[in-house]
Structures are given as structure tokens and as C-alpha cells.
Length: 412
Image 1: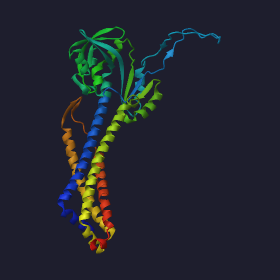
Image 2 (image 1 turned 90 degrees about the vertical axis):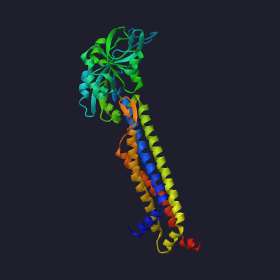
Image 3 (image 1 turned 180 degrees about the horizontal axis):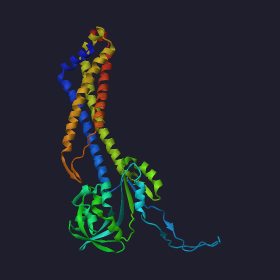
Image 4 (image 1 turned 90 degrees about the horizontal axis):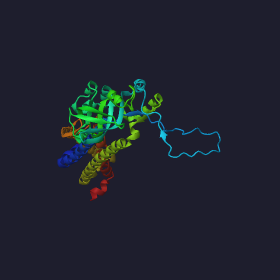
């Protein structure tokens, strides 16, 4: 060490209690920064995962404009006025007629990780006198599991049972409770056309998304096509997952050239989810930075007190030939050492806190503990912010000390 660093070492070790308080303030700030960002990232990721258990990154469906069917030919005579009362809008096409062909085209895109077709219709479920509305989804079990990981959210039964028996149905757990059925019971499905068919409950589903668990009913897509009298390649939606869900808008624009149907990224209809994630991140960063800034003020106060206490010693040093830069180096060395010590211990403490939170029991959907994320970037950012704030907290008192006039101090 040079002479300036030796003097800084003496000033640090002469007041161990002040040193410990300063180090602990940095330690607490950095550990809270790590914890807050890790926890918020875990909450955001889990919220997104729960949302995407029933919603794909990109949805393709029939959104053709309504067409008005002419009631009578338009006369050539432009002076003739035709009055039409209570006109009807008629949609000539509904659903997707050639879902298999579109899926084959989409499968060539490199960013796509999963494709599945669904046939979704509103129905009524009846169990004795109990009757409740539900959304019946005909699914391709293998690709459905690939896109939504549905099998992970089954609390009872097996998704493949839907392919083994044409009368098998899986219900959301809240829907099953609402209608009073359990696995192995029979339930009647009634379509909007009045067609009724009996199904056996072969499984229960719990995604954690209450809206889906209260309304979701799943059968195989072949069974759904038979129930609604549709052709073997008919679907109401084609659902696509990609490698990075944040790029859904960009990929949707590329896929729109492959089909005449509507290609909709998840952000278009669920912007509130994206906004909520951003807002939670902003809150986490704001709170954690505030904690670090408060810790910086604590270091500033301690360094300022040190300058005031050592005012005569500083004057003697300057009288001996030390210049302002030397004084700044002495006090900045102290603040940087405090920042390094507090930063390293803060990272360790933050990691311990995150590990403890990660083991706190919390049951929802597939979760068994509170969600956290272990991201290296959080630790690097916490350490960098801690060093920057302690540097600034030490620079201001150091700059003040460098401007001391030794003659005025020594004269008293």
C-alpha cells in the first residue's frame, strides 16, 4: 500500500463500530436489491406461465368481415330507391376448414416450438338438476401438451385417456366442484343446437387461472368434430408457441403472409399482462434503488463525521505537503473499501434470503413454494449500484476535506 492507502486503513480501523454500521447499511441495501428483483422476476414468470396455460403466444382464427347478403338484385335504374328493413348480416364462412394444411405450412418456421389446433364451443354441462355453462375444447392431446404442458396441471387422470375413449372428458377443478362431479362420474354435454351426449369424467385440471378452471372442459378434437358435425380438418383456432413470447408481434407479422385467417399475437388482446409485468419490474427496481440510496446517505453521514472529527489531522497532512488529490484518495479509499465489503456480504446475504424464500411453502397450480428467479444479472447490477452509490457518498466529504485551508484550522 502507498502512504495514502495506509492512512485510509488507519482511519477505517480506528473506529470499528462506525465501520461496521457503514458496511451493514450497504449489506442490507444490496441484499434487499437482490431479493426484491429475484422475487419480482419469479412472480412475473409464474404469472406469465399460468396465463399461457390456456393462451398461446399466437392465435390464428377466422375473423373475416361480415358480409350482407342482397335481398334482391340492385336495379340498373339509379332513380329507384329500395327500402330494406331489419337487414341480416350473414357470415358465409366460420372456423378454419383446412387446419392440417395450415399447420404444415407453419411448421417450417424456425421460431415456432409448438402448434396445436382446437375446436372451441360454448356448451352446457348437466349433472342431474345442476346445469352450468362451460367452454368445451376439442384438443389434439399430443400437440396440446407440447404447447400448454396440460398434463402437468392435471390433478387427476391422464390426458391421453381422451384418445382412448370417445366419451372421455376432463374438467377444470372449479367447474367440477360447481356441477358436483368427480373423476369417474358421468356428465351430459348439451350444445347450442340442442344435441346432448353423455361423457365420463376421466380427469380434473387445475391451472391456477381461476377463469379457466371454472369454465374449461376438454375432449379429444375428433370427439368434438363428431359432436358438432364438422369435417376432419375443421378447427376454430390454431394456437402457436414460439421460442421467445416477447417477439410474438414480430413473428405474427411474418406468419400472416402464410394464411388468409387472422394472426393475432398475445399482446393484442392481453396488453394488461405485459403492462402488469413492466409495472411490477419498475416497482421492484424503485424500491431496491431507494434502499441503496438510503444506505448511501448513511455512508455519507459517517464519512462526513469522519472528516469533521479528523479535521486537524487533515490540516496537518496538508501542512506536511499532502495536496487535495491525496486527501480525496484517502477518503475515497475508505468509502470504496466499505462498498466492497458491504457489497460482497450483501450478495451472500441476498442469496441466503432468496434461498429461504424459495423454500417457503406456497401452493397454487404447479407451485409448491414461493416463486423466485436466480439471475446473475441481479447480483451484478446490485454490486455495481452499491459501489457507485458508496463512491458518490464518499466523494462529497472527500472533496470537502480536500478544500480545507490548513492555516485556518491550525490557527483555531
